[in-house]
Every structure is written in C-alpha cells, then in structure tokens.
Length: 317
Image 1 (cartoon, rainbow, N blue to C red):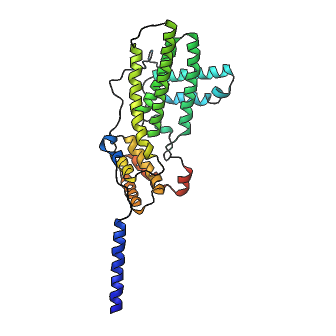
Image 2: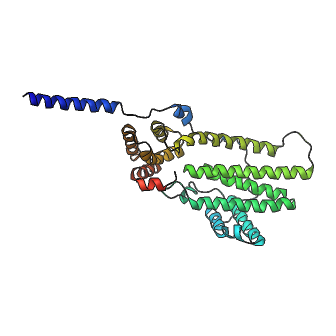
Image 3: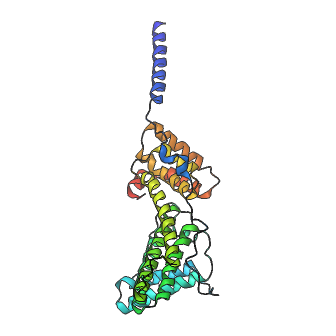
C-alpha cells in the first residue's frame, strides 16, 4: 500500500514538475519591432508625378516577355562581345524595353511568374535586370556623348518605369525589391542626363527645374520605402529572428508581400529557434497559414512545413 502511494506521489510530482518546466520554457515575446505602426503598408503616393510618358502607344504585341527574350538573347554578347556587338545588343534590349512599355500596361504578377514556387530567389530575374541595366548604361553613355539629351532622358525614365511596374504590379517581396533597385537606377540615370544637359546649356539658374523637382519627389519616395523595408528585413532575415515578431508579421502585416515572406521564413526559424516553446509557436503558425484563404500564404506554409535540415543548410534565405 505504501509502495503504491509512493509511486502515485512520484508520478504526481513528475507531472507537476514537467508542467512547471513547460511554463518556464524560453519563449520569444513580441517587441516594438512589430508595433502596429511598423506593420503598416508603405506605399507610393498617387500624387507622385508621372516620369515616363510613352512618345506614342504602339500597336505592337511587345510585353515583358519580349523584353525578357531580348535580354536572354543579349546576355552573353553584351558582356563578352566586341564593342560593335555590345552596342548592337544594348540597342536591341533598349528598343525592346521602350516597345514593351509603350504597348500598354503589364499583367499583374508578370515578374512573380519567374520566381520558383518554393524559392524566393530567381537567377533568371536577376540576370534579366542585370542585362537591362548594362544595356541602358551602354546606350545612355553613347547618347550623352552625342548630345542626344531628350532620347537619353526618355531611356532613363523608361528604365525607372520598368522598376515602378515591377514594384507595383507584383507580390513577391524579393521581386518588389528588384523594382526598388530599378527605380533607383533609373532615377540616377535621369539625374545624370539632367546634369549633362545643364552643363551643355551652361545654365546658371539656382532654382530647381520641374524635372529636378519630379526626380527629387521620387527619390524621397523610393528612399522612404527602402529604409522601412530594410529595417524590417534586417531582423526577419537574421540568423535568429524573434519568433513572436516573425509570426506577427506573417499574420498581421498590412503588406501582403511581407506576410508571404515572413510565412516562408518560418521554415528557417524551425531550425534557427530550437526552444520547445518557440517550436510550438512556429508549428501552430504554420498550421494556421496552411488554412489561409491566400494561395501564396498556403504555398509559403507548405514550404515552411516541408523544409528539411539539408535544404536549410543549402538554401540562402
């Protein structure tokens, strides 16, 4: 009898001890990093001036796919060919860029489609935008040497407009980051054209011109978004993110791009934050995401759930 009571007492003590231990498990608590103010969607104002206006809408069937094809055709020649070959391929890419932008708007998600379903990085997309940048820089330099400022300005603004569409018409966060980079590059090129034009005209006016004011407005807008995004991504993509904050972004951020991205990052957090309490939080969040009405959230949840240790070590988040 006494033996039985002793065993029962031991079991009760063990269960109680485990319960207390469970309550004391390290678990992340949400911080000011995900204060509601930090979860607002940072958008481009509708009041920003139009920088790119097609010289005339064309009836061609050119679109983003045709630009992609032109870049693919020029990818090796634009870096390895002789000077004449580089110029020809740069001109072809720039012509495809202008034709595509002048043929009308692109379809929503046009760049998202180049991103693999379970990988947020796309070598194809990176190469496309790198070739576009090289082509625009190559042709822009020749146009400025010739004093063809108007044509150079239109080309720089077209490069910017490509970035604006990439940013505004896609959801994947990494894709939209490419858009920010393209807008920044286009604005820098447009400023280069303005400076060259000012030098040629020997202007002494201290007052900023309308084109300068327009560029300044967009530079401020792009910088504001880039700064806000970098602040959030610094810890979301860190080697050891705060789990509670990561889940809050995945479920409450007003920007769908960040909700999808943070859900995807839960897969990495499974191997980065091994505390039992945090592991339960991650598993529960992935489960909720898997039942989301948003197909991209569900897709990100599948990635997070299926990710294994080999993929974790091989992948670059």
